[in-house]
Image 1 (cartoon, rainbow, N blue to C red):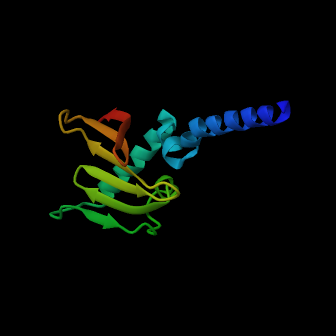
Image 2 (tube, rainbow, N blue to C red):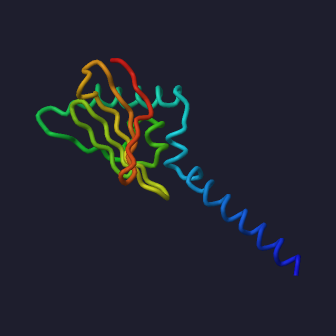
Length: 131
């Protein structure tokens, strides 16, 4: 009788551990925990796109995700969509969990730009820089 109780306890501990660790195994969680250097490189790539692809009078333009001129760091995100606005780059990340990534000028502080992620209703600012 003691062996089944021990096995049950071990399985329960494994299940609880998986419940707490599983969210950290997602692409979304891994993206939110990148280094500041990574975010700096990603936002520089976004700035390059904004500088080389003027939106003009359109509200936004959509880039082809297969465009070879899109910087590698952005292509590595497996984007499903890339949209540009005058002061914003928005990327829909593909993969097991789809989430948005936005590099945009802060509306309340004109010299500040933020990199944020959004998955369902979970919106988080992961990087802030002065421009």
